[in-house]
Structure formats: C-alpha cells, structure tokens
Image (tube, rainbow, N blue to C red):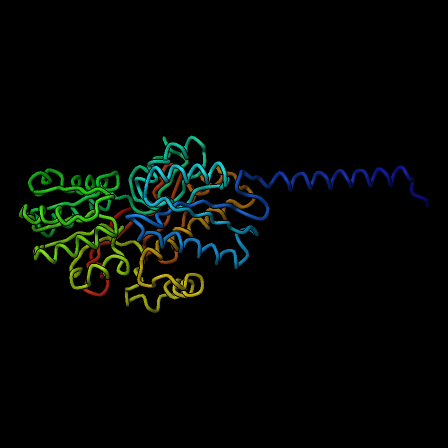
Length: 407
C-alpha cells in the first residue's frame, strides 16, 4: 500500500518541529552571564603578591594550582576554569582599579578569594552595585555576612569577632586578673578582632586591658609599639597583626625579655612556615591561636587521607610551594568550596545562580578542615565556617586543646 506523500511530508514536518522544540529546550537550560560559556568559566581574583602583606601571595598561587588540577581532570561540568589573578599590593586604591578591570574589561563571572579586609572593603559597594559575586573573600571581618544589605558578598572563614571572643573566654578562665596589652592593625580587620575580644571580656575589659596601640600597614616596623606595651606592665599580649608584623612582634617580645603569661596570636598569622619560622621557633613557643584547618606541620595527621591528597597535589601542581605553610591549605579549602558552588550551578552559570548556590551549601566534610568543622550556608547565613579550636605552639607544631567553639 502506497503512503501518501502528504502524510510523509507532515511526519517530517512534525519531526522537525519536535527536534526544534527539543533543541530550543536544551538551549533554554543553558544560561550564561559574562564570564561563562560552553567551554570556559572566568574567575577573577585579587591578591597582594607585593607589598606589606605579600606573605599571603602564596594563597593566590595555590588557588591557581588548584584550578590547574581541576582543568587537568576535565574542568567543571565540562568547562575549564580560567583563573585571572592580579596584584593589588594590599593597597585599597589599587584593589578598586583591579576590580573594575576584572569586571568591566576581562568580564569575569565572579571575584573569588580576594584577600584582605581593607581591599575588600574598598570594592564592597561596587561589587554589589554591579551585582557581581564577591565570593569567599579571604578575610574574616564580620561585614561579609550581611546578605540583606550586601547580597553579592560572602565570607568564608570564621568571623574575627568570634575568634576574639574565644581568646577572651580562655583568658577569663585561666588568668582572670591579667593585665592585657593589645597591638592591632588600624583598620576594620584589627578593630573587628579588638571588638570581639573586648565584648568577650565584658565588664572586665576596662580593668584588664591596660594598653592598646595600633600600627599602620605602611609602617616599617612595630618595635616602638611593642616597647610601649611592655612598659605598660601587661603580662598578656594579644597580637592582632598580619604576617610580616606578627613575625616582628614575636621576635621583639623575645629581644626585650618581655615575660608573658599568655601571648594570643590571631589565626590569620599563625602559619608555621611563613610566620613562626622567620620569628624563631624558640621565640614562638607557648603562643596561642585558633584553628579550623588541619595544620601541615602537625605530625598527628601524617597518615590522614586528606593530608596525603593535599601533599600529592602540592607536589604535582605547586612544587615551589612551602609544605609547612598553612596558607596553602587555606587556598585549597577555599578553592574546593568555590569548585562545589560552580558544580552545583550546572548549566545555569548566571551570577545570580552563583550566589544562590553559594547560599545553599551543606558540606559536613571538606578536605583539610578539622573534624567537626563544616561548610554550611543559607539565604540568611553568609558565614560558611563558624567553628574553631584553641591551639598552643609547642616549639615545632600547633597542638589543639579544649573544646570546639562556634555553631
């Protein structure tokens, strides 16, 4: 029996329409903003590769090495990561220049892991006005967890105010009659730590804190500040400094023969490789900090699967990196988290979806985070990591003690 030509034509037409509809549906599932397409995702980053905070520059290099690994493994959902990282020298004015270039000229999908409180503060409003994610900033200032007023900015590490309160709690429990001297960087970073510490001491802050002195990031040394604190009669030192000044302070305390009952060092400068080693291990013995990452110098994690994987990654993708530098662990955990966010985005690589997925994380186990420390966010909780534990330096490595703080 012959088929009607009209019937065949109709079937071909209907088949064509169906195919077109399917193609249209497939195309509709893929959504892109500037910085993303079928083959690539552009991720921007600003780091102090030079200047007074250049010790942190290794974080940017290690982040790049992480994405090299991701690309070697096929990318994220079939797309390679183009990591565009620039130097601002920890100069907020330069940060503004670099952010504008990355957003308006390079057209990155997002900024990720930009380092420092002053630099990120300088571009805070700009990034939110432009509606470009300022994601997992490498600073613990409390301002990064304000989704109501700044929905395009999210922190990553525990807030400085919370860490300051932990030191205050420990001090009240162990040395309730202490006289405290404080050195802090004169910006939002330093003031956040200071506020948390003072809030933690409560009514006792006025009587226990006998001296507070600040320094500028452009100062060549903090020798005069340390001498002033010693002369105040303080027997406890809260050291709120970035790596260069932290190492200077630890050394100067020893040179002056300032006998302390406790020396608290903020966690952002607790790297054995980049701070304690140049300061001198003998000078650093007894320092107290907080941790939420596994420390690469900790002998107890030698057979830990995470540590072995991190070490293998370092040797293959960042062979010039220091295996004793905890900042390289920081980079790894930050990059792992943004990797997860972009993976969750699927084919909807819009900036709005990047923030939606960043606010929808539930990662109970992230490589190189301490056991019990999780990465968790929601639409009204922009603080991914909120747990940490006190640690004391024994002359060769950090040794954790006490309970885990945070929620």
